[in-house]
Image (cartoon, rainbow, N blue to C red; front, side):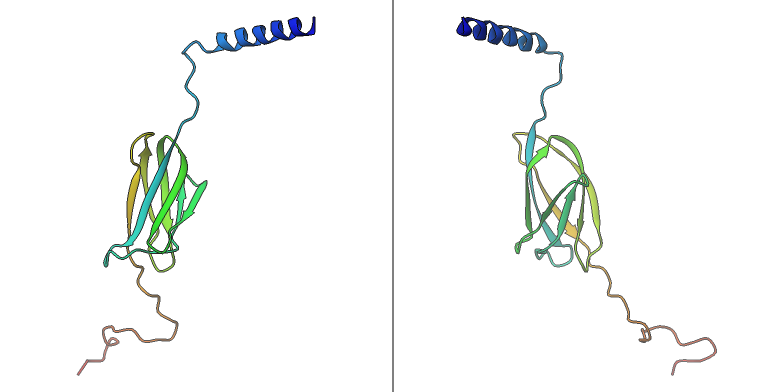
Length: 132
């Protein structure tokens, strides 16, 4: 008797779930992988230690060769930023497609060094003085 009740319950559950899949529902979330390389825009040398943030949620850090990887990125459009000390922050967007290579190359521009307070910088002479 217990076996018969279990079989009927399983059959009813299967029928209910099958009725929910009428094709009008959106497919479940699918994922893609995303990889990339962070390089110096002037020298084309890899930049290790860059923090790559994807959609403000996922993060990865570039390795010694400037490479980074996200194994599971929701498919569709995404925004990303890349930050590392000594370089300007880079922001852009892309689109992840399952089954296709999703790779980016990020070229960071070096930030000019900040001058320490009280140090002289090459400039024009003060007003009223001539440079000889």
